Length: 163
Length: 115
Image (cartoon, rainbow over all chains, first blue to last red; front, side):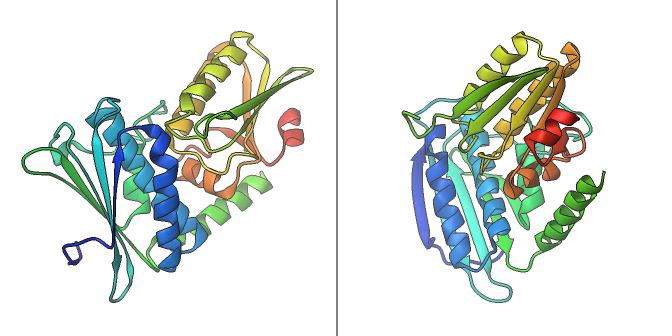
């Protein structure tokens, strides 16, 4: 993970209530936009944050509405520039090794969040906080491999039209 | 919509089924509303269920999960479930989850009615 100053450029606290997700998405998407990410990438970064928060709300706090989450954002300098996002909570701790994407061939509702986060972000890691809670660190860099997803996306759309 | 987290969902009966038209962002705050409405519509076992997503600018995995559940119910019922008019960002999540080839996805309601 890239070295970053101790204090985040933006720090936001939210309670574990899904009704606040849209506000966090808007903040993260806007910051990504100001850092130079294109519209699709901004949407992907917001989606990753949304999925991470949903996981904490649903599994970490088991839908309790009074849990706290902190969303920390850093604008990364250097080459390439990017956005670092750290989400912290005081929820149930789990072994980071147990946080794995599920088999996508098993078509069923739910369990897609970890897969989505890993797909759209360039670096992802979970760790236990001390003395409680979890910390998720995610980095998205400009000109990342996700650019290729756009061309893949366009190709698959064209293929669907041709079907 | 009386509250920001509420999703507006219109339904329209067609000759051989139902068109469902949600309007708004679909995330964890409102996916249950979509699930309830889908469940109610699917109780009638329509032979065709078209979900028009043209007015849905954002969907997270809770929305996708709801649609996967609806697809499974449709298969059990022998119904045809078709998604149409997905915006690029919404289509992207289906692609990331590799569900774009699992669902029947078309560009318009007219196309969905003819599938």
